[in-house]
Image (cartoon, rainbow, N blue to C red; front, side, top):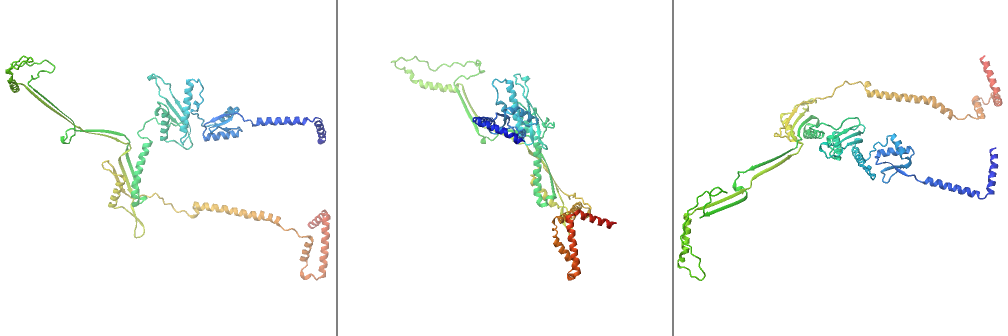
Amino acid sequence: MNATATLPNGTALLEKVKANPRLPMMLGGAALVAAIAVGVMWSRAPDYKVLYSNLSERDGGAVIQSLQQMNVPYKFAEGGGAVMVPADKVAETRLRLASQGLPKSGTTGMELMDNQKFGISQFAEQVNYQRGLEGELARSIESIGAVQSARVHLAIPKPTLFVRERQKPTASVVLQLYPGRAVDEGQVAAITHLVSSSVPELTPKSISIVDQQGNLLSGTNDRSLDASQLKYVQQVEQGYVKRVESILAPILGKDNIHAQVTADVDFSSVEHTDESYKPNQDPTKAAIRSQQTSESNSQGGTPVGGVPGALSNQPPAAAAAPVTTAQPPRQPGQPNPPAQANQPAQTTQTTQTAEKTGPSNSRRDATTNYELDRVVRHVQQAAGGVKRLSVAVVVNYRTKVDAKGKPVTEALSAKELAQIENLTKEAMGFSADRGDSLNVVNSPFTSDIKTEPEVPVWKQPQMIDLAKTGVGYLLLALLAVFLWFKVARPVLRKYTAPPLPAPTETAAATEAVLLPPEEETNPEVLRLAAKYESDLALVRDAAQRDPRLVASVIKTWMANDEG
C-alpha cells in the first residue's frame, strides 16, 4: 500500500520537474551554496587562547588527559610552553580542571611582570613582584628530589628612613614531600640559605620551614655540631677502622678481629700571629740600615753659653789691643809706606798667639742604624683536625687441630701481640705527643649460634609443604581420571561409534550367526532360517508402515508377561 501511495507522488514530482526545466538547476545551486557554507564554517578554526603556561611535565600530562576526556580541543603554543584552548571555553575549562585539583603546582613566576599595564600603581607592581619572587623560589625548591611541591610566603616590610622603625623581612616555606621520603638537615639548611640569599636583608634565622604534616624542619637552636660535622667524625673513625682491619685481616682473618676508634676532632678555626725581636745580636752579622756622621769645630770665637733661647749670662770678654794700627786707605798713585813691609809676619805671629791663648771648641757625632731582626709568623689552622685518637682492638684466639683431629683454640703469644700492636700503631699513625692511646686484647669470641633439637622428617615444614603439594596434585589426577572414564569417554564413544550396517548385511550376519558352518547342509535348518527371515521381513514392513500398531502389540506382550 505504501508503494502504491508513493508512486503517484513521485510521478507528480517528475511531472513538475519536466514542466519547469530550471528547477533542477536552482535546487543544485542551493545545495552547492549550502555545501560551501558548511565547509567554510567547518574549516574555520576557532580563536585559541592560553589556558595554562609553564606547566611541569606531570601537570601537563594530567591536564591533557583531562581535556581529552572532556572532548575539549587543544593545541600547544610555539615551543610547547603553553596549552591553548578555544577562547570561549577558557573560563569553563579552568573551572572544570580546578574542580579536579589541576594543575597541582600551578605556581607563577616572573612571567607576571611580562604583561604589566601602563600606568599601574606602585602597590600593584610591588605585589606582582613579590608573587613572582615567591613563585620562582617555589620552583627552585621543587627541583629537589624529595620535594613534590612547595609554597613560599614572603613578608617584606616597606622601606623607611627611620632607623628605629625598620623591620627585617621574614619568610615561611611549606614543603609537600613525596610519600616515604624525607629531607635531612643539610637539605633544610640549603633551602634556608637559598631563600635568604634571594631576598635582601633576610637572615636564615628569620625563615621557617614546615612539612605537610606540620613538623618544623628549621631548627631554632644553634648546636655546637651540625649534621655535616657528625658525619665527618664518623667518616674519620670508619677510615681508621678500615686501616687497622685491612692490615691485620691477612694475618688473623677477617672474622677474628674487631677494631673500634674514637676520634676527638677539633672544629675550631684558629688564627695565630707571632712576632719576635732580637735586638742584641752580633754587630758583625748585622746589616747596616743607615749611618750618619756629624763634625763641629770652633776656634777663636766667643763660646756660646747660657740657656738656649735666652740672653747670654756670660760676662763679656776682655778687649785686646791690636798690635798694629790701622793705616788709612791708600790713594791711587801714592807710593806704599815703608813700614808695611813687615805686616805679613806680624799677622801670622798674632794668629799663633791667639790660637794658644784664645778659646777652642771641637765636636764629632757618629750615628749608625742597624736592621732590626724581627720575625712575624701568621698561622691559620684549618678546622677538622684530629686532636686525639683512642683505638681498641680485640683479637680472637688461634684455632688449631690437635692430634685427634679436633679444633682447639689457644691464646696468642706475647711476641705476636707485640707485633699486632706495632702494626696497629703504624696503621693509625700513633703519636705520643698528641696523646693517642691503643689497647690490644686477646680473647676468645663467643658464638651466637643456638643448637636446636633435630626435628623429624615428617615434622619439618618443608616436608609438610611438599606433602600438601603432592596431595593436591593427586586429587587433581583422580578428578581427571574420573572425568575421563565417566564423562569424556562415553561422549566420545557416542559420537565416534560406526554406523549400523544395512538390513541385508544384518540379516546376513544374523544368518551367519544362527547357522554354524557345520549345519549349512541341513534342509530343516535352512527351512527354519528362511521362515525366520520372512517373518522378520514382515515384522519390519509392519513396523515401518504402522509403528503405533507395533508399539501397542509389544505393550500387550509386556502386560501379558507381567500378569
